[in-house]
Amino acid sequence: ATPTALMVGTGRGAQLGILVRGPEALESAQAIDTVVLDKTGTVTTGHMAVSDVRAFDAPAEDVRRIAATLEAGSEHPIARAIATLVPDPDRGALDEFASAAGLGVTGTVDGTRAVIGRASFVAEQGLDVPDEVSAAVDEAQAAGATAVVVGWDGRARGVVAASDTLKEGSADAVARLKDLGLRPVLLTGDNRPAADAVAREVGIEEVVADVLPHEKQAFVAARQAEGRTVAMVGDGINDAAALAQADLGIALGTGTDVAREASDLTIVSGDLRVAVDGIRLSRRTLATIK
Ligand code: ADP
Ligand code: MG
Image 1 (cartoon, rainbow, N blue to C red):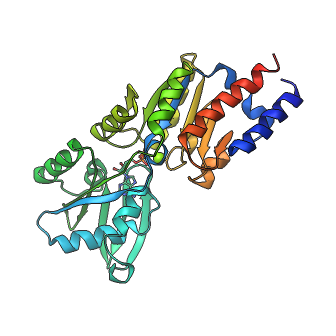
Image 2: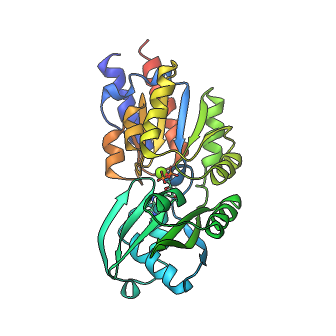
C-alpha cells in the first residue's frame, strides 16, 4: 500500500463521517469476508424501555425501587432504562456497588444486599430463583424482551422486562453487506429469542446469543483461526476486546470511548449503513493501489 492512496482513503472517510485511526488501519480490509455485528446499541438503538415489572413475594414498589437504585450505578442500556423507573430522590442509598460485565450488578440498597441481572448470575450470588420467577423470565423472553431478575433477602423477587427498537437503516445495511458478498453474524450477550427476533427483522441468518463479554473476543478469534478475515461492528459496551481482536474494528461514534480506542474506524453518526460504506471504502482504497 502506498501512503498516498491510503491518505486519499482517509480523506474520503472524513467526508463520509468515518474517522480512520491510521493508514495501516485499512491494510486487512481487502480480505474481509465476515462481518460480526453486536446487537444492543449497534443493530438496535440501545435506548431500551421497560415494558413490564413483576413482583414475587414482595411489593411491586420495592422491586422497582431496589432495581432502579442498583441500576443507577450502571451504564448498561438496560440499566439506564431501569434506573428511570424511579426518580432520583425516591431511590435508596446505594453502597458497595459492583458491576459484573455481561451479567449484572450487586450492591446494598439502604443496607440490604441486592442483586440484579441474568437469572444465572442472581443464582450464583447465592439467591434462590424460584420456578415462578424463571417462568416469568422465559415468558418475557419468548415475547422478544430482555428480562432481568432482581433479588434480595435470600431470593429473587422481581422480573423486569425491557426492549429496544431497531435502528433506522439496519435492515438496509445488512442487505448491502450481503450484496458485497460478506457474511453477517449477529453476536450478543442477550437471550436467544430476543436475538433471533432482531436477526429475522434485519435479515441475518447466523445468530450467536447468550455470549459473555470475553466470549465475544474468543468468537472473533475462532473465526480468524478458521481462516476468515473478520470485521466487527460494536458500540464498546462489553465488546471492546472483540473490536480490538477483529481484522477491522468499527466503533459507532455514539458508543463508548473504549470502543473508539479499540477500533480502526469510527462511524461518527453511529449509522450502520455508514459502517458498510467504511468497509467498502477500505476495500476500494486498497484496490486503487494494486
Ligand atoms: P449485548 O451483547 O446485547 O450488547 P451484553 O453482553 O451487554 O449484551 O449483556 C448481556 C446480558 O447481561 C443482558 O441482556 C442482561 O441480561 C445482563 N446484564 C448486563 N448488564 C446488566 C445490568 N447492568 N443490569 C442487569 N442485567 C445486565
Ligand atoms: Mg452492545
